[in-house]
Image (cartoon, rainbow, N blue to C red; front, side, top):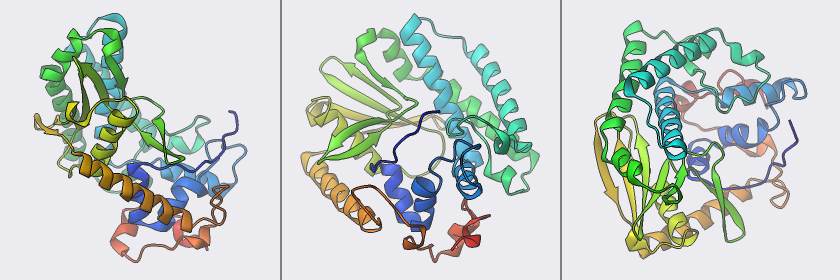
Length: 308
C-alpha cells in the first residue's frame, strides 16, 4: 500500500468528533495514521487504528443498509437491472452472519487489509453482554429498511433517470471540494438531477437527530460546486426504518452562516496543532474530555489512559 500524506481537511463528522473529545479527535485523525499497515505500524498506532474503526450495533445497521443500497443503485444505473428484493434480503442476511462471526472472533486484529470498510463491533471488542433478541431485532430492522427502500418513490425516480443524471451514489472515498483554500469532504448517499433541480438523499436507519450541519454542507456543495441555485436544491432526509421522509431547503443566509461556522471551526482545530502548515499534532496537546460517560462508550477506552 502506497504512503499517504496526512493533510488537514474538514467535514461535519470531524467537527462532531472535535466537539466530543479533543483526545479522541487526535486518536482518530493523527494517532491512528498509518495503522492500516500492521507490519509497519508500531503497537500503539496499530491499536488506535483498529479501535478507530469499531462500530456499535446501530452503526452496523446503518452501514449495512447504506452499503446494500449503494450496491443496488450502482448495479441499476450501470446495467439497467434491479436485483429482486428476495435475493437482496438473502444476500444481506448471509453478509451479516459472516460479519458477525468475523467480529466475534476478533479477526480484525490480524487482518492484513485496511479496516475502514469492514464491519466489526464495539460490543465484541469490549465483551458487552447483548441478548440474542437484540441481535435479531437489529437484523430485522436492516431488512425493514431495505424493504422500505424498494417501495420508495426515490427508487422509482432513479429507475427513470438517464445515466448522466445520477451525480453521486455513496462513494467509497468521500468527495473533496475546496473552500477558502481548505479541503472539505462530503459523502452524498445519493444525488441526482431532476429537470433543472438537484435532489440529495440522505438515508437514515434509526431515531437519531438530524444533522443539520451535514445537510447545509451538502447544499453548499450542490450550490457552489455543481452550480445549482439554492432554490433548486432539495435535501431529502429519508428514514427507512419508519418509512418517513423530510424535505429540507436552505436559504442564502443559512449558507452564509454555515460558511462562517466552518471558518471558525477550522481555526479552532488548527490552534491545537504543533505545525498547522504541516498538519503536525502532538498527543498531549489534546486534552481528554471531563465527561466520564463519554469515556465509557468510547472506542479508545482500552488504551486511552495508558497513554500520556
